[in-house]
Amino acid sequence: MTESWRMAITATRHCLTGCAIGEVLGMVLSSWWSWGNTASIALSVALAFLFGYLLTYSGVRRAGADSRTAVRAALASDTVSIFTMEIVDNLFILVVPGAMAAGLGTTLFWWSLAISLAIAFVAAVPVNHWLMERGKGHAVVHAFHEEHTHHR
Image 1 (tube, rainbow, N blue to C red):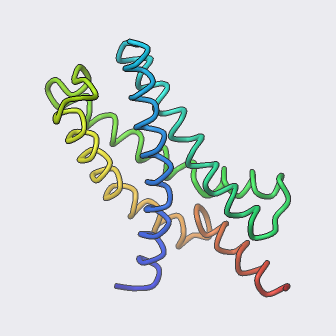
Image 2 (cartoon, one colour; image 1 turned 120 degrees about the horizontal axis):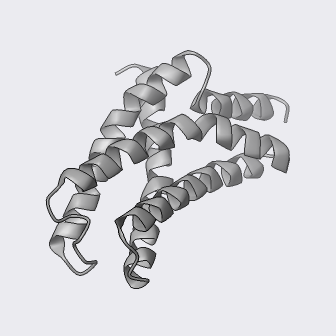
């Protein structure tokens, strides 16, 4: 496996973490509040983006960037990756019979969520690889880290 594919896998795993946190929190909250499918998906997607961006933002800030630079890096590096994961993840959940109606206490809910995130990860790795090969996506964050590390 080449280094560029390893970096794409690492970047995608990072995005997956934020997506998973947002998805689970969104599903838990919308179930708790008895929201319908559309509101549940909207909340989960919004929280997936929020947590995905927040993880990158905080990492870039810890590396020494100012807030504006960290926001720009998070938007540049995560938007397409999270978007890809959310489309794939939610399509899977929608096509699994009963998954959207399954409650938090059911195996179907957790199984379908875990499988949907795994499939989303597999779908996003080549997207991140393609972006990084062109100096976009997570390459922006890596370039920042490289630049900042060399200036210390």
